[in-house]
Amino acid sequence: MKINLTPLVITVLTLCTCTKNPFNNNGSVSDHYSIKGIVELEDGENPESLYVWLEIINIGTWTDTTGQFILSLPHTGSSEGGQNGQFSLYAYAANYQHERTIVKVIDGQFVPGEGGLDNKGELRAPLTLGKRLNISTTVMPSILEPLINQTAEVTVTLNPLDQQVTVQSRRAIVNRATAYTGLFIVNENEEVVHKEDIESARMADEPVGINVKTWVIPMDASSSNLAPGEYSVVPYLLVKSDAPPGLLESMGKELLEFSPDYLRLPMKRKDGTITITGG
Image (tube, rainbow, N blue to C red):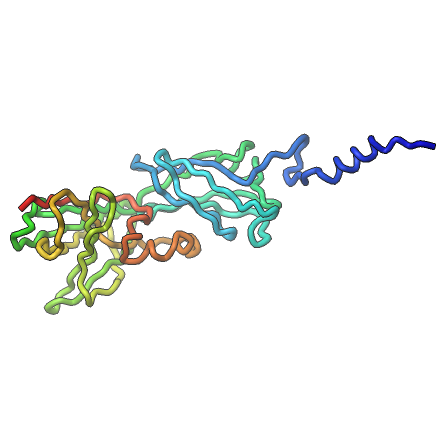
């Protein structure tokens, strides 16, 4: 007797090629390797280049000019390192209080409708960061002539907004007095063209209480060999926080060092400016 195997073959192939549905919903399964969301700053500052990090799986990304981000899991068929479960998703800026929400991962995909995600795989609400410390820098005089021996005074003002904040900065002992140092001179292309520092300087902690604190850093314009033009003056300092150590490490340790990569550290501050004349 001749048997028609076509329907049977089709049925077997269909069953073998079905994608496992980790979300227990009906119908076809769409990919949920990525999630979307928004990070806001409570004070209305530009939310560009803030950092978003997923713990344990240890993946991160940066916000765009509008504070939006997309975070994607590796397409390996299972979460990295075999991790499944509920994880904290953090939003971070160095001088703000970090915020987090919970997301769920099963079989290498995010689970929409669980934790902080809506049914589309987007954050139910923006992650809003509250500011902890205002950082502003001024330079006097702000117009310098390169052919004249001039020393400018760079004043860094630290204003904590809610409670004591501990900062780290570079300093040295000069003539039995504490001398603050550690400056980046940055051109209009956001390139570091000069670093102002003292060779014997070391990093040190300093609590900043409820009162405004100022540091004055001398800058020798004649030794910097700056071409005529306008520059930003950026102080090097780190703000201690209770963010998970893994978050900071995932950005790259070079962002925390006295190197040009420091400019990529997510921090909102008002930098000083100087103009070098044509001589």
